[in-house]
Each structure stands twice: as structure tokens, then as C-alpha cells.
Length: 251
Image (cartoon, rainbow, N blue to C red; front, side, top):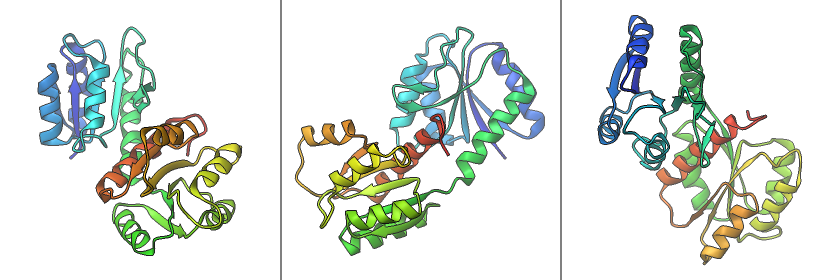
């Protein structure tokens, strides 16, 4: 049974119920900020449907909080607004949007598309690291969470693999023999063919905030420090890959 959390305090909620309940959906409703966060954490619905015109709720802040919480960060969010205040991204956080008034068939199709992406997505991730034990741990963890993976032990090998089999994302160490991670990142982002590949830096090299800012400025999508929990790596990959799919030309 599919579950939808509707954030609204007006007639839109009644319309959503009329459309979805005959289809077997369970509808949760919330119109207050803390109430919505509590429902999302307790029930982890399949989707959140947010009316940005709901009084007493800052929709942009709500989306941010949902995406920052590890319990709710993976829940897809669909937003609507009469005032056309529904951009496809909220400060870099990916959301989907649709126009009002609500067309029942378009609404159902949108929800089904989001569910298909969320529940059946499988991505290929290249792990680039010269520590075999860490590669094994990452491969096992990612494989158990729906990713296909392969690995490269240095930057040169990574670039050769990318040329033959373009990954959706790369988990990239910086300190490696032959070609280091910075050089890999530079070559990827200078290539029209490969610049859209998502790159998550995962490094044990002593770094400063300046290094992290530099990595992001050069095109990395995230910059993680070892030791890092596998759960955090997985959540980060899921986030950057969703961002890729919603970008123009995404997979």
C-alpha cells in the first residue's frame, strides 16, 4: 500500500484524497511545521506532496529539514504553488514540481514516475581507491543497497575505465599513485562527455576547509572525510544521483 504525506490546509487535500484513496493510497495530512516533520519521521511515507502556499509553513525550510534528516532524506518531494513559486531545486536540494490546478491523470502519472525512480533505480558507481580493504567494504555496502560497482586502484586506471564504461557516480580518493584524485577530477570536469558524472570525494588526507571548498569549486558534488560511515556514503550517493537525474540531460 502506497503512502503519501500531504502538506496542505485547504481544498487541495480533499482533491488529493478523492484522486488517490480509490487507488488504494494511504494519505497522511499535516498543516503545521512540527506536525509534518513528526509524521514524516514516524511513517516514512513513499512521497511528500507539499503545497508551498500552505499558511504557517515555510516550504523551503521544510524541504531543507526533510533532506537533512537521515530518516527522511531519501523521500521524494513533489511541490505545487498557485504563485509559481515551485522551482525544481531549493538551494541545490532536488525536488519535483507540477502546476496547479491539479490534473488527476497528470498527478497520478507524476507520482508513479517518482515511485519508479525511487524504488527501482539502480546506479553504477566506480570506486577509486588504493586501499583494497576499503574498496571491499564499499563494494559490499553499496551492492547491498542497490548499486552496481567496480573499482580502480589509481587515477590512471580510473580514467581508462571511465572511457570504456561511463559510471553514474565516482567515489574518489585523492592520494593515489600515477594520477591523483585532483587530476582525475580535473580531467572529468574538462570533458564534455564526462563532466556530468557525479563525483563524491572520500579522502583520508589531512584537509582544511579550504581544501573542501576547492574540491566543490572544481566540480565535486560532495567532499567526505575518512573515516566515514557507509550509511553516510550511501546517503550522499543517493542524493547526488537524484540531483543528476533532475538536471537537464540527466539519466
